[in-house]
Amino acid sequence: MAQRYIYDSVESFLPDALRGFVAANPEIAWHRDPGFLARRAPTPPGRVAVLSGGGSGHEPMHSGLIGAGLLDAVCPGPIFTSPNALQIAGATRHVHSGAGVLHIVKNYTGDMMNFRIARDIVRDEGIDTDVVVVADDVATESAGDGPGRRGTGATIVVEKVCGAAAAGGATLSEVTVLGRRVADNARSMSVALDPCTVPGSDQPSFDLGPDEMELGIGIHGESGTERTQWRPAAQIVRTLLERILGSLDVAAGERVIVVVNGLGSTHPLELGLVFGHVLEQLRAAGIPVVRALVGTMVTALDMRGVSVTVARADDEIVGLWDAPTDAPAWPRLTAAEPGELMDTTVAEPDDAANSGPECGWLSAFVARVRGAIDELTALDRQVGDGDFGANMAAALGRFDLPLRGSDADVLDAIARSYFVRSGGTSGAVFGTLFRELSKAFAGDDDFPAALAAGTRAGLESVVELGGAQVGDNTVVDALHPANEALQQGDSLADAARAAAEGAESTRDRLARKGRASYVGEAARGAVDPGALVISWLFEAAADAG
Ligand code: ADP
Ligand code: MG
Image (cartoon, rainbow, N blue to C red; front, side):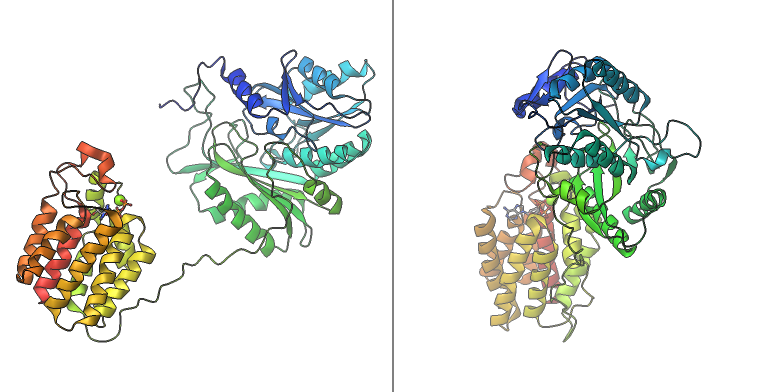
């Protein structure tokens, strides 16, 4: 198995991570003995302090939530292991400034015990404390009297609201009551496509088949409630929301805050996508989402997956959610209601090419390219990044054959389709060439003359655009010889032959332009796919003319 982490040694992984974290966040200090992080600014006299902590591996929670208006201190334990009672007692003492200290604790036995012992210790010193327990994970809900639900994503909602209330001057009992209200009214559930691996271990936390996913996964890689085949996002979200809303018993019209959270190795694009479904489904159920946080906040090391948290919100909670904080991991833009879900259908360019006389040569060209997508993909895999076939298919795949219209109109339709639908270099290069061809055909009724003029203009524009010369393994290697032949009045068949030979000449030469220039020796033996497609264009012209 490939190494999954960047580190110097397993033993120093956490301290080395902490070292960089504290240096990057100079408002936060590390207290080596007994081991906690705290704001450098002392708690103002008479203000309640808010303290959290737990096993490491869930960053940016909790360390990234230290700041004005959020947490005063955090006790990090070893990876996935509770901090010890002396760490917690030391941090409690440090942040106490006369008005008491609130502990926010996720519901795991080790955490519950150590925080409790710490409170017992400091009580004897006259420090007032209380606790809010977060137990939001519906995957661990059971009727019996087990340990109860695990604490997961809702923890950050509780921390934000309590931190803001404490900053606003609430008393310890007020902050505690409020925190419990938030915790009691929040539920979460997760799904993972990939387990997590503890640094230094060669075993992931569980095994998933190539096409499987796990629902109800815990933030320490505890396996979930249901293993299923991969499903589309909308269905996953439906399952998660069903469980969450069922447990929370939310009725239509009740306002909620939503957190869509990455579990460690999930791309921001996926988080946005999941949130879109959450918002759509909650709105369809008549549940207004008044605030949202979409980001990687509560991780399970490097797990690939997401958790969804729904928390009931009233005006007081929303106000505290919106209150400012300078905690480094709290996103700046959470204080607004989510907007409308936009229409994601792609705008269709006006390039039908389906009325008028048949345009035989371009129909033949388009058909030939469409029949060779796999071959073109394979060639670009060898000389480039493998997307050339897809780019050609995107540009040419949607036309109804045969193409209809004047040569100029069909060439223009193809040019626009290249620009709009085809990414990469080829969209720009082929779009430019077909645009020049279209302009030439619009100004000249004679087929060979228009082709010659268009080819010359196209070659000039492509060279000006990309700076490629003959020998660089690009479309220019086919375009240039075809243009030479046409300018000296050779037949279309000769021009097509020249283009084909030019394309073939790229086979054993190393590229200097385009993506192929990055792959070097690996590209030897394959023709440049762009040049090959150009040669097909001239062959189609020769066959027709
Ligand atoms: P990308 O390089 O962005 O992956 P494509 O795979 O869609 O783009 O297109 C690659 C083709 O573009 C190459 O086969 C080559 O013929 C052509 N090409 C690359 N660079 C240039 C350039 N500077 N001028 C003209 N054509 C180029
Ligand atoms: Mg490519």
